[in-house]
Image 1 (spheres, rainbow over the protein chains, first blue to last red):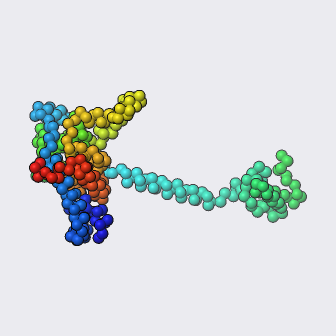
Image 2: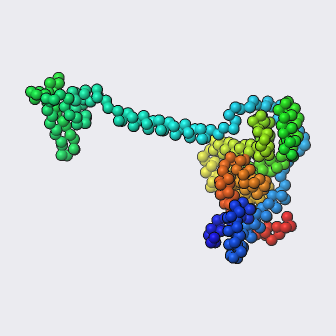
Image 3: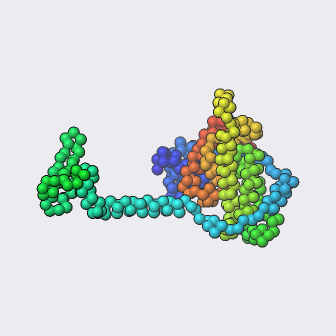
Length: 173
Length: 193
């Protein structure tokens, strides 16, 4: 273990919070490196100083009278009934529900996109206004003819369908 | 207090003996108040948070799993009560302080938090804790001052042990820097304290 890696674990090493294996590696490095040893010593000393400060610190307490009043006030409260789902953490439940919702909506759209809608296509081929937006489809009747015009400027593709007499019977209406 | 004794007191409270609650929480009175003080950094706020903790512990005692540690459970309530209190205070300060007043305070180089803190007699430990983020402070206080182990701290804070380790490591490094910068004499006379 090098100094950089040791420095990463030193703050936990002084509190004995590393695994035995990692702690052993840090110990081995400290035996060989005086700079890291000094760093560890400094951390241990400051930790000890902070603990000593906490022990010496005066924290204001309730007076006995205040404490008794507080306990009487609490004792007058009602103990709530046990919650059935008290121990359940809602975060994973919500995350699971959201994931399910996403999967379901994704599946729905995929199925919707793949499913053929022949009725719609047939109508599109018959109506002039919709012919412009409908994708190129083969004519429905065997004797129908089509002509495709593509604009060079806009790449707009227009497909015209004619019957055997070259008459667009619906177009004039 | 041994676990069996605590279990018995919990049973007594749940069976209607409200007086037993005082005996149950008496051992945690000072430690909880101390922890609340170090989290809130204000004596009055600490009393309010600790009071809320005892009240919630009483009201929701039925939800306490008697096979688990009562100490961890009540510490968990305190940490959450302190967080709620902090959020409520922050919202109140935003609501009650108008824009011109806020600008004046900024211009004078102080903010409501600073003014509130000045009223407190600040200890050196509190000064050191100021450099920590709220989560680092909670982790440091639980592990190093209250001496809960890593797993217990994670249970109280409702986070992973990895998260506790990461924040603890950062907190110790910051505390070391603060003590070396501001109170180097503490390291020389550590044993005198």
